[in-house]
Image 1 (cartoon, helix red, strand yellow):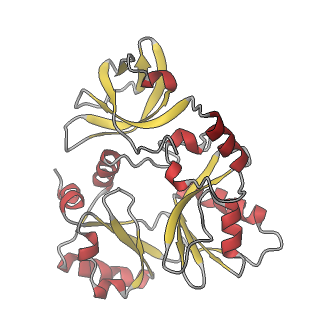
Image 2 (cartoon, rainbow, N blue to C red; image 1 turned 60 degrees about the horizontal axis):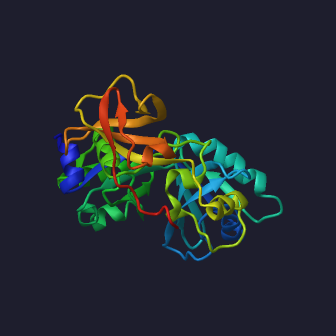
Length: 303
C-alpha cells in the first residue's frame, strides 16, 4: 500500500481539487431558482448547510451532479470539470427575469481537499483561516475541502506537512473511491442515464415541488421498472482484463468502468451499468473470462 492510500484509509491525506468546476450564484432569487431546477431540496438549506443534487434535462437525463454549499450571500456549486460549460449554459437558459448572477470562479480560486477518517482532526485553525472550509468527500472516506486564494496554497501545504498529512495521488484516490462505491459522473454514468439507473436516489427528493425533469423521474418511480442499474462489481482476479465487457453466458450485459486492483482485497473492482438480467439469482457474470460478483451498493432502490 502506498503512503497516500494508507493515509486516506487510516488517517488523512490531502490532494488538489482545483480542476473541479466551481460556480458561485449571487442575487436575491438564487435559492428559488436552484430549487426550481435541482432534484434535491435547496430552499430548506440555511447558511453553512450543504447538499448534493442532480440537474436534469427536460427528458430526465443527468446533466450534472453537484455539491451545493449555501452561505449568507451566495450559493456555490461544485462539480466535475466536464459539467462546467453545460451547467453554465443550463443556468443561463433558465435565468430570465431572475435576480441571479452566475460567476465561474474555477480559475480564480484554488481548492485543496483533506480526506480520511481523521481529516477533520487534522484540519487546524491555522489552516481554516486561509480560506472557506466545506464538509465533503470525493473518495467516500470523509473529510473537508478548502477554497482559497492562490497565494495561500503554499502556506496551507506547509501546515499540512507539519501536521504529517501526506499527499494522495490520483491512483490512491481512485482506489479508495472505487472501494467505497462512489461513482463519478462522466465516467461511471453519463448524460444518457436517468437518476434511477445510478442508484443515487438519495440526492433526489420525491416530496418537493416541480423541477426540470421531474415528470420522467416520477413516471419511472411509479412504474417501478428500471431496465439497467449501476452497481459496484468485483472480479475473481488481480489483473485488469483487456476486455471489460460484462457477460451473462453469451450475452453482453454491461461494461466495466473505473477498474482498479484493490489494495484491500487484491482483486479487480469497478462499476458497471448492468441490464436487469444480471441481477437474477441464477445469472453467472464474467468479465474477460473471470467470474464476477455484484457487490452490495447503496440500498436506496426502493425510495
